[in-house]
Length: 128
Image (cartoon, rainbow, N blue to C red; front, side, top):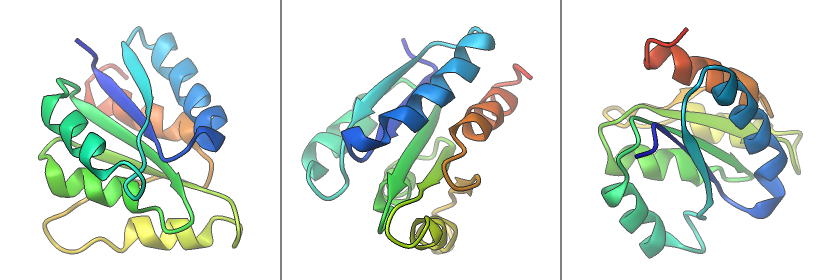
C-alpha cells in the first residue's frame, strides 16, 4: 500500500518530485513516484488511478498541466497540483491547475514547490 502517489508528466519533473518525497519521508509517509502523462499515456494513467490505493495524489506538471485535472476528474481523493516552470515561467501551468471546473477540485501550490505539496498532503493525512 502507498499513502501518497506522486505522478509526474515527464521525467524532466523528477527533481520536483524528489523534493516532495523528502518531505514525505520526514513525515514517515510511504509514497511512490510514477511517470504518467495525461497526453502520452491516458489509458495507463486511467488504470493507475483506478487501481491505486493512495489516499492523496500529488500531480506535478508543466505547460498545459492537464495531469492534476485529469486525475481529479477520475477520483474523489484529494489531488494537489504542482505547476512546473517552463515556457512562460510556470504561469501557464499555474493557471491551468487553478482554473478547474466546478466539481473537479485541485489544490494548487506555488510554481516548482513540491515541498509545499508534500506538506499539504501531510496535513490532509493528519500527520502534520
